[in-house]
Image (cartoon, rainbow, N blue to C red; front, side, top):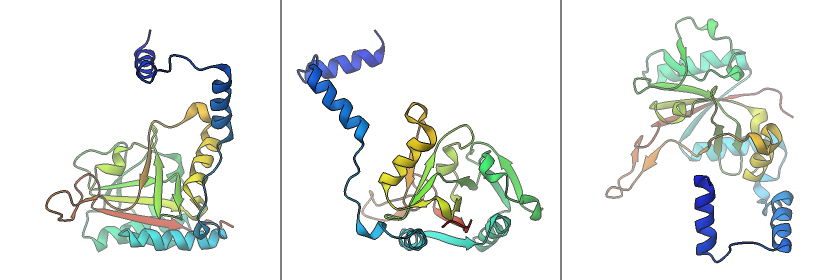
Length: 227
């Protein structure tokens, strides 16, 4: 018996549910298969261009800064401008994700780029995103060998390259998109939902940024011709 089977067996016995009858099993399977969406707020049910505007509004309210650019060719310049604005060195640790390979990084030869998981010495992490939720201004990232989760949390500054086409209305849309892209049998190890830079007010109700993650979160939003 595996550790998983022992844990589930203990839970079943403590709940007095050592077994389910056929009807109960069928009901559970129907519920898992149907995946009925919850009520969707009206503010998220709008044309895509308005969803992008709503995402920017909500993200900005969460202390996320957004630079909107016309294409991938503008990304290196936008990141360089961000580094200069905050007096940061021209060095970034970037996710080794093919989604970022199309960016012409060579156009900014002074930008020193290394790729891989973040180390404590890395000041700026650059990653792609999986989706962005307009309803709440939330970025969604998924972990993989190409997208180390450390880049989301270790550097003081997190820069996300986001295509406008990745903006969706609701969290329900995000989960549906994840299943469609990956399939139920190939879900990522972690799904991170990021609503602003790290902050806490646990100690004497004093707001502190950067306690558990980046002090600043910046999005380079690429207008990629999304309808």
